[in-house]
Amino acid sequence: MATTDKWIETANRLGYTGDELREFVNKQVEAERAERIEVREAKKCEDEMEAKKRTDEMEAKKRTDEMEAKKRTDEMEAKKAEMEERRQIRQHELDLKRIELEDRQRREETISTASVGSVGSASKWPELPKFIDGMDEMDGYLLRFERYAENSGWEKNQWATWLSALLTGKALGVFSRLSAEEGKDYEVLKRALRERYGLREDG
Image (cartoon, rainbow, N blue to C red):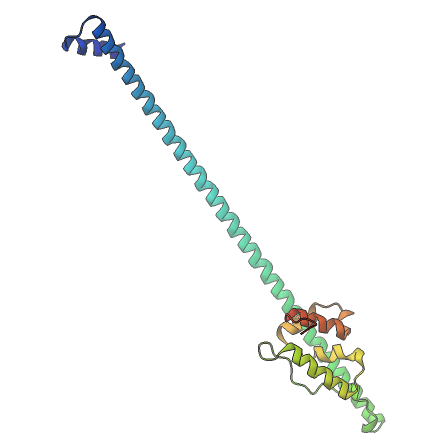
């Protein structure tokens, strides 16, 4: 009501009377009402934008926290897997040393009871350099090993054991991940090594 009185007073000062006065006052009152509505809508829009901004910030923080948590979990899993692989490699090295010691003892016992010429060539420890990652080519190394084994007269069922004694690095890791039964099968070990080094049967 106070707003209407204000515009009536203004209309009187301007000399409006009758219909002109009413039209002037109504127009001004409507303009004020429209302005108030516009201000309210603008305030509402601003509040909604602020709320959305806060929501987006919360979602972004949540995603960041989840990514950080996943990263920590992945790092822990990778470290755990690395430690397990190192443990398997250490265990395999111990097994190889045990096998080498047993083989040496067996050869010494054989020598003590028979002539040196009676000792089978299959008991001889491989006189080959070890396979070195980044330096040796797996396919060529396997070929050289097979020819050496054939020339030495080794039994095929001993090849996997002798080859494992010459592996290092990733190649040794491949052998360590095989089961005890698979680790005795040369063809299984050979196939696993070729797959690890990206080699195909057709070369």
